[in-house]
Image 1: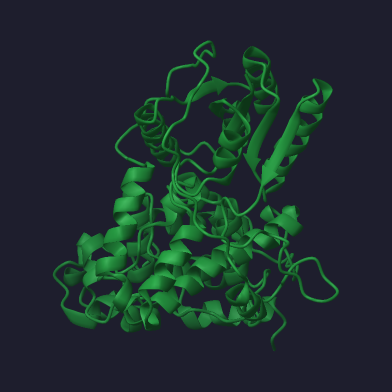
Image 2: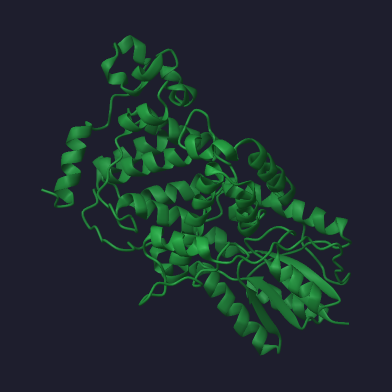
Length: 447
């Protein structure tokens, strides 16, 4: 009897899963395996919000497999060692896994390939599992990756995507393979069934107006699918197919955002070091010392004195999520208004975000900070103007900054102009915007 192992990583679903389908085609019995790697916690990436969401994803994956006659096998330890142990237990000939793009994932893949080869087993690595277009499939002349989004988007849009794969009807798992208990989770519930419900609701009710409403902070008119895409409970490729089928300007705008995800992953796959190092323009003049640390603390806690920044940061603390427009504003404020290293902000986001993703998080932070792929690296987002434009009535600010709940209309974006009694203890700005802009321009040598 032929047996195979499928190692699940960032692809915790049954629909549109090439490694699982390939394993089922090649073997009579398949072991669906997830390894809880202690190195994730040691590296500081085991954030509570993601840990809880992961627990829900694994429970849902196990339930889906049991409905098909199988089960999820869970192990704890170093992935290569655990995969080899499982393969030996069931006498599997081959192991299937999704291709990795991060340095962490690529090193795991290399260790696994070497370990399996030592026991005469084959490793099959599958692309288009976590992205719609594989990293490396699109390259400009003279380079191994695209460094500018617009030409990448043009080529990405013309790329012929494979068809979506259905979920298997039956999964037979060897009874002899032991499993650890599924991890216990908290209130952040993940899983493929929740992801697919959310996608269907979004396509029916939110997608049409996305092109005009995606930056409306108070309306929260975004898909809220980012955590599901990060954990792979939703296929990026299937999401693109279904959005394109819906059609319209909203779908076009949404698909463009999905392309940004693939763009960042192809960049990280080619330059894994950019998870910590500046991609393009190196800046050594970031502020440091007590004053910078105090400003960064005020930013983290949502008490900078700029209501839109503080509202977004408080939403992050409360929900483990932040609206995309809010992410752009708070990142610009930290790196350009306060002139604090982008890595400080990226680390804080990874500590709290349910959808904390190395490619999207680190590369988007670099884009805003001017060290990444933005073709206008010195642009600065003014938090007052951003508030007036994207929260014109102040409803988003009042939702998250209760000190200003009684302030009506757009005046909420400039509370320092109000009588002290109306500010209810809300702090004064940590820096005046003109002074901060002068400091930024001087640091960047712009005058």
